[in-house]
Every structure is written in structure tokens, then in C-alpha cells.
Image (cartoon, rainbow, N blue to C red):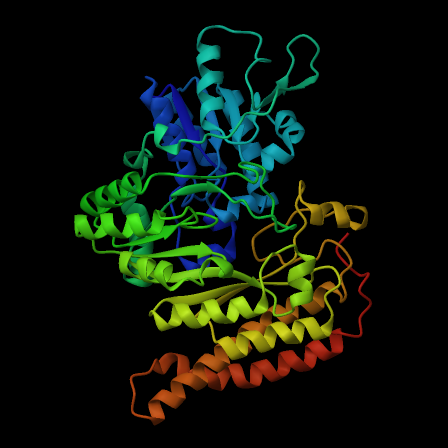
Length: 491
């Protein structure tokens, strides 16, 4: 029996692209909140929907557990939840209604509910937490347990007044600065073997996620930050190393995804982390997300490599300085090249996030991005089109041009929601072409190694026989799509 049943709204099976990768991660932010509530005396449970088939499965859990509170608490450390996908929003609505039917007080915390709290209140939520959620959740449930009727003094909250039925929005809650004040996430609530099975069957290895920081101080104008804003706060290297040690010991995991927006920004943090990992004799690999301008110091790269870093995803975005400046990215094309060179020299795989369709992007800018990928040869790429989210400068620029569709259904939707330089179909085809050109180049590299008698990836080499003609066909189709009017965007 649980006093509080936690869940979240990210169903991997509802997002075909993500499910096909077979790389599911537990809801780290959700089990963080659960750990805090347990630390103050509540019995907590977790209905983890990540590997579930339907929100309807919640009913049997509520029937069995009979919790007083249903908390739909999304994992704010997972970039997928920040995309505010409508398929997941609908799942949250369904679970909120189910919770109400079972007599639960329903509390929701997510990026999407922070931006669209009125919709969530209309669809079954009693309360929506705005921004960073743990302390607000603790205060709210403590007040509810005490029989309170007035919640206006609880910062970071919105709800409907019992007297007027009007929506009340309380003062913003300041972000938590000392993250070590929170208990470690409640990993014991996770069905670890279910995740391990998916990973081992698909990849022969197992990976878990964790976070060392919250927030990002940079101001890329398309990046939404409804939870932490422009703040950046770190857990201590000691706490992070201790959590990793526990996860290795209890679950045998040897690979981690550090889910921070930016890993290791605080001066000296990475070096101290390296020293702790060495002192504990921990053996593991990990991947991070970072910025190229933070990866130009050899001492930092050496410390990252020595602590186990094997792969870094950087927000390269574009090979055009004009576009990077328009995005307020704060990085230079030359820095992308230099960071890539330095990381590769230390044996670290470099992967690029790329973005097409930003306002003012021309064919020449697109070609510059393609040329950058060809020249720098990253280990992998991820491609998106510019996506306006509420609360961003980019959204303000394009909101008057938005059609009826203002959120993607799933993460590979790739819909243009405003009129860019080219028609929406152009960007979908561009996405395919750039990926095929990238894989073709990788295959050619493998053939070159084979001819030199070096170890090579034979599967990647053989795939050139598919990618070569497929890329030519996509390029021909892309040239035809250049002629379509750009105003035919999704409405």
C-alpha cells in the first residue's frame, strides 16, 4: 500500500523512433521526488510507464494500492520530456482522470504542464506544480495532510479556487541551490530487470542514467527552460561518485548517460570527480552533453577521459556562423572544429546535434552544415528542425505565424510549425538525405580501412551499397522540393 503513487507520462512505445533505438532509461526525476517524500515519512510507490503499453494499466495499480495521492511527475532530466509531445500529454490527461475516479488527489509536475497548466487542471489535475518540483510537492502534501484549504502561500503552484473556481497561480519558487540537501533517487522502486532485458537483447550491454546538475546558464533563444530557468547548480562530486558506486555494486551497470544539459561546467568539478573515481577504483564508461566552447581546454578533456568519458554530444546546430549568431548560441564554427579535433585526439567519440529550418536559414547555410559534417566526421548525428516552445525568444518571434499545430505528436514528427525558407516536406527529405550522406561517408571510411588491411566495421561498409543510390535519389527529390512554396506549413 502506498500513500503516494508516482508515475510519469513518457511511454517509450508511443514514440516509435525512441522505442526502435531500444535505449530506455528509468524516470530519474520521478524517483528523485519519490525519495524526498519517502524521507519525510510517506509510503511511496512507482507506476513506471516507460515500458508499458497503455495508460489504462494504471487502473489495476490504483485498485491494488489505493493511494491518497497520484503524482504525475515527469523526468525533467530527459530531453524527450522537454519536447512537450502531444501523445504524452494525452496520456497524462488520461491518467489524471483515472486518478480522480479512484478518489486520489492528482498532482502534476512537468515542462508541458508548467507551460499549459490550465489544460491540465481542466483534464483532471487538482494541482499543477510550476518549475522545480520537489520542495513544492513536499509542502503541498504536508498541507493537504494537515487539512489545509488555502494553498496560496505555497510557492510554485497553480490550482482552482474552491470558492470561485478561478485558477490561482502562486508566487514562483526559487530553485534549490544545494542539491546535496536532497536524498539520492529511490532506485529501489525501479524494475531494473525490465530495463536490463531490453538493453541486453538489443545491445548486449546495459546503461543507466543519472544527473549531476540542474539547469543551464546559456541563452540559446530556442531552448525552453520552464523548470530551472537560466540557473545552474551542481551536486557535489562526492555524492555523484557515491551514487555511481552504488549502482555498479547493486546492479552491475558499467555505462551511464549523464543527463545534464551541460556536464561539468563548475570550475574544478571534473578534476575532483576524476580523482574520486580513481580513488574508488570504479570502472565504467559514460556519455555527456556539452558545448563546444567548454571543450577547448586540454586539462578538462584529459580529466573527462580519465574519469571514463567515451562519448560527448555537442550542440553543433549549424555550420553557418550566421545561423549560430541568430540563435544566440554563443559559439563559433571554428570552435566546433577545434573541440572535435581535441576530443578525438583523446579517444572520445564526438556526436553532433544539428538543427535545420531556423528563421533566415538559406540553402547556402544548409550546405555549410552538410560540409561541416563531411569535414569533421563526427561519430554520430542527431537532426531536428527548429521547434518553437513557449517561454523562448524564438517562440515570440514566430508565434504570430504558428498554425493550429503547436506541438509535435512524437519525437520524429519533424513538422515545421511556421513558414521557414522551404516547405515542410523539404526538411523531412533533408533529414533523410543528411543521415544517408553521413552513413555513406562512414561506410567509405570502413572500405578504406579494409583495403589497408586494418580492422573495419564490415556491416557499415556493406551498407554503402544501399546508401549510395538512396542518397542520390533523396538529393534529386530534395531539388524538386526546393520549388514548393514555403507557406505550405502545417496548420
